[in-house]
Length: 237
Image (tube, rainbow, N blue to C red; front, side, top):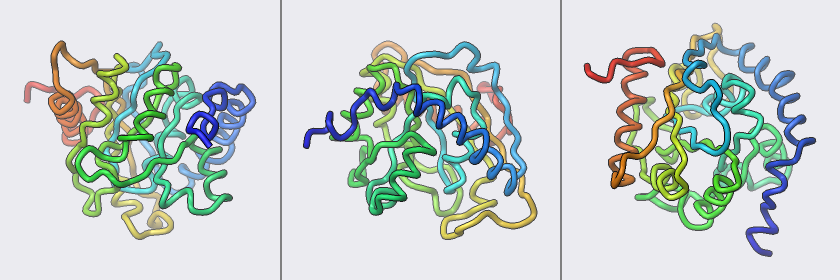
């Protein structure tokens, strides 16, 4: 079976599936997230009017990260946003893969690349096809959750895709997820811990900028948002 048959792009434009994702977001994902943690979101104005294809790039330290992104970003972003999900973790069982797809509009990726990250090969091909078809994508460029909660190395795959498809990157800084639900925990800690989502301004690659340099700029921006705890960091500091 070809990749096109496995992942028809029509699925990502299907209005009934979009309505289902919006319904799930309103009635399940967002209420569940708010039942366990106390979220703070900043930077909605940075993405006002953002349409078409782009790549949302965020740091990754908890299984709370994807639910936070899909429940707390504005509707005009989440209704079409798709993301790759680790095939070895989320696609081993049919029911889990179906639920993951409904909740997070996913497609499977193989976590084999240690240098470039998971968005290479067939996964990069699918991601590129979606971007060229106007579908925004969420990528965690660290490749896996940071075990210590610290900001890790960003693989250049997301930046390479942004350059190749000529789309912007929207930087996201996710704060508090590791403390609320560290790797190994099935549920967040009790006590309604604080978490935050900082939505940065979309960034485009500079002329002749390499993928490594571009993702380095994105990482610096996310690091500044985390350190300054704001969606509007002072990049001169």
